[in-house]
Image 1: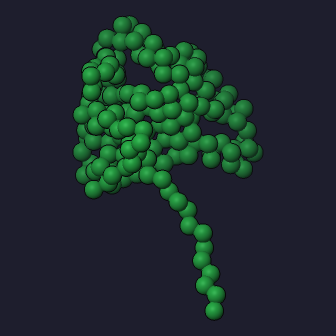
Image 2: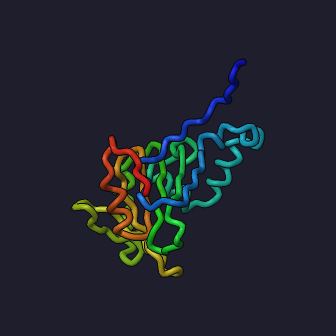
Image 3: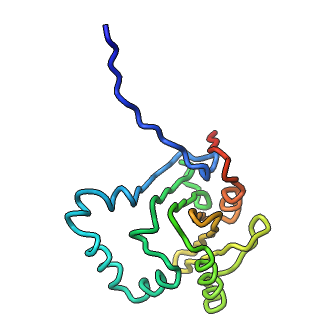
Length: 171
């Protein structure tokens, strides 16, 4: 008798996942852009849609960011309790952190009610205020390959404490 098995997919849990993670969603941008559908529709059509808004085009240029080349994965996480101040978005790719910080500093100066520098774990990060929704989003850049955003300063602070060699530890 011969035992036949199917190959299993190994999934690496992202090291920035908060320990209370119960909801985990991944959008693999790279895989989508390489899909047959996108190849049929054309990346140029997607780029044209992005370029229709001058404000978006200007921001992307200031950031040195081409989302169709520089963003690989977007992960959203959180507990299943629905707590408004818990949840983390992890964006992996390639980012010019200096340009991101420069743009954030400019926005903090020009739009003080919208973008504010905040101290988290002894470093300067940024709070973006969405006044219509009465919500803040806290953003940090632990490396040139990762951007983190959270609905609370504490939640972002916990994620920023993760070291490159840490493994995710879920409860």
